[in-house]
Amino acid sequence: MIRHDYSRVDPKRRANIDHKKKQFAKAEFAQQHYDHRLNFYTLPPTAEITLEEFETWAINRLKVLSELEACSFRNKSPEETAEYMTSILNKYLPLRSNTSRSQALQEERKKDHYSHYILRLAFSSTEDLRRRFSRLETMLFRLRYKEDDFKEREQFVKSLNLEWEEVGEAEKRELRDQLLAATGGKKSAAGEEQEWCKVDWERVPELVEQRRVFLRRGKAYVPQSQQMSLVVAEFTKWLDDALELTARALPRLDEDDRLAPILAHLSQSFTAPEAAYTSSDASIDGLSAIHANAIDSLSENFPLCMRNLHMNLRANSHLKHYGRLQYTLFLKGIGLSLEECIVFWRRSFKLMTDDKFQKEYRYNIRHVYGDVGGDANRRGRGYTPYSCQKILTEPLPGPGQSHGCPYRTFTPENLSALLQRVGVQDRNVLKTVREDVQKQRYHVACNRVFEYGHQREIKKVRDEGSWSATDLDTIVHPNTYFKRSWLLKHLGEGNAGMVGDDEKMEE
Ligand code: SF4
Image 1: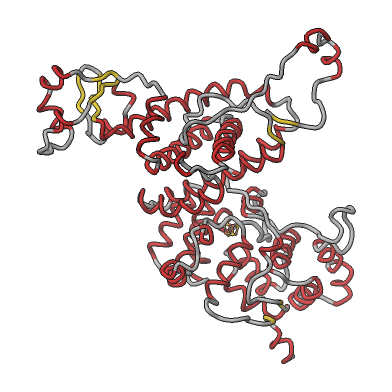
Image 2: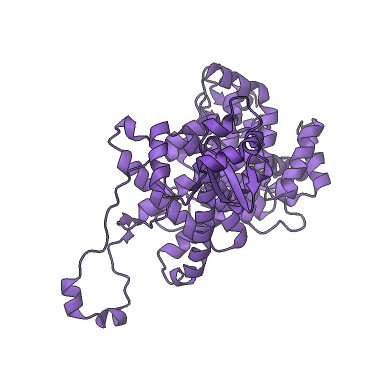
């Protein structure tokens, strides 16, 4: 499936390949044609793709799945989820119907197909990952199924050749009352009007649980109107079986040193979604330059991890190495220049002599900015600000250290106290955050606090339609948190100018 410029066949093994076989071998890879928008992913992909496509497509699908998961964590209704997901899906994994006559139809379906298989590889290693992946893929399938063009959906379902047994007329007459009762006793004699099929009851647990089918002799009688549940249940069953098989095949993949690191990285991204930092994150409309003196006031827009560092810095006039590194990278990411960053740290370490600062700290800051040290590539750019994933997967801070994500590193009591200190007074929010944290959904807790602190502004941009759902998607990077917070708190303002400049002039 992967195209690459060099062959990975072990030279010793390559030597054993029969040259005659090689000469007459046919190309094994073929493009698939996708007749339907929906896919049960029963056939593995067989065409070549580049390593770059392999990674980007998987990351895009991962983004979609994590957003779906965030919706379910936040108890969004199916309608709210569908609305929220529309622009996310359009951006990362568009999938148009045949009637759209889009030129990109086959490409979109190919990306959907391949990305599903890549993530299948990445998430089949443990029971927990498999369950999570299957749940989210099922959510995605259901969402798309509901939105699919009626006719196309019918054709798709037919193409699946699912083994459903149709309920004959005689049996329908015999069971008329029971069938009617199963559909909620609607007057329109549903038993006569609707088509029914019967399947083993284990295949439709959702419908059985909701008592929406009639059960007899181990069979569930499903009306046509509930077909979606049946198809979705089939999808989940297929996928669960396939994931088991993939898990067994996984050890062979470990030998592939191109794919193994990518897959490992992807499965790690499932713990906390990865977010790449781009320099555009630092350019905020209206926030043209930041000076050292502005950090105190800007810290109101910082996420809890950075706010905690800032408060510790102010309380102790010092921060230990990892805290300094995490914070310096963040400040660099919000657009603080190297010169201003040095000024910021110099003033913050006010109990320290100038000589000590110059000798022991200044170099490190310059290093982070890429002004000194590092290899040629890194020179000039320095290190990239840490994402939530990076911060959340680092070793826990030791005594006296304050780096990391407080949602993960603080005890529940200390976390509540810290949140109240930064203005989160609502008992419900504090309680739900505590629940999120117990379930290790740290970034969900952080997003909840963000939404609480910006509820009025979020409502405004939503009502006006000035921000799309992707502008308000789940935050997975501290710098995104800052940028979004700042923009929301300065809605409708023009260029805010040089932030911190006035203070500087006053000095
Ligand atoms: Fe910071 Fe991310 Fe933790 Fe929020 S979830 S506090 S942004 S590390």
